[in-house]
Amino acid sequence: MMRMDYTASGGKEIFLSFEDENETLFGLLRMRIQSKPIARLGREEGNLAIIRELHIYGPEVSLKHRDPAAAQHKGLGKALLREAERIAANEFHAPQMVVLSGTGAKEYYRSEFGYNSQGDYMVKSLLTQERI
Image (tube, rainbow, N blue to C red; front, side, top):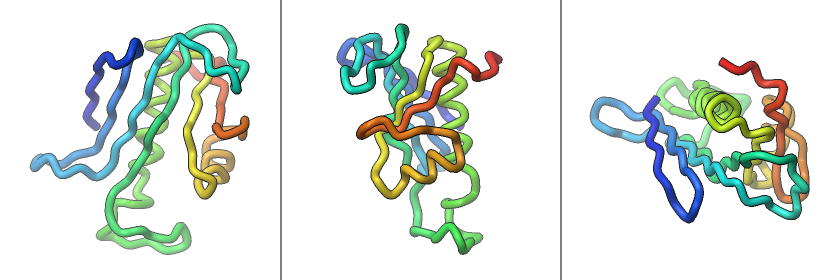
């Protein structure tokens, strides 16, 4: 897993990715850490961690089927999300993670990772995350 941090628009951006030795991109996650509140969330105090994008590249594969040659459903997205949660909780002391999620992925975030729907967002408390 690769990581790149940079400052943009008054916040911190973290870019996580899985790439091979030829820099072929298999998956990415873009997370923003900001201190300004989002009114629709009525969030707790502290930094706000927002996953703006999580994408695994390659042919689309159904959850019920597996394709050994495809990057999807090999745990890359789960690893990216878990690392983003760890970074947000441990490095930025963010009390919650917010995911900008399409309608089709909301149930996945809910059932697999414990996120709850809050308006247009999926939200999870990080206060119980083990601080490593």
